[in-house]
Image (cartoon, rainbow, N blue to C red; front, top):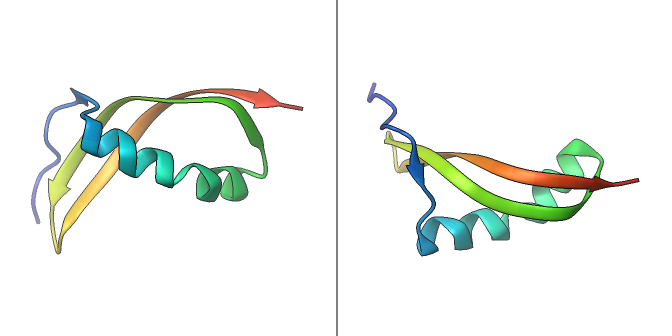
Amino acid sequence: MSEWRPVKPVTPEVKHICLQMKSNVESMAGLNFAVYIPVDFISKDEDGVNYTYIVKVIVCF
């Protein structure tokens, strides 16, 4: 098993991936986000690259 890398600011590539996941995240959370800003991420290589994102959100009620 590989270790998680240190937290880094999002890159344009990672931001693009994160924004593509927005609707999936909203669906899983059962919420709509008025603001969804990727901030930081961590990654590890294990059967491909796995990402965990830190995202600033504001929820619409």
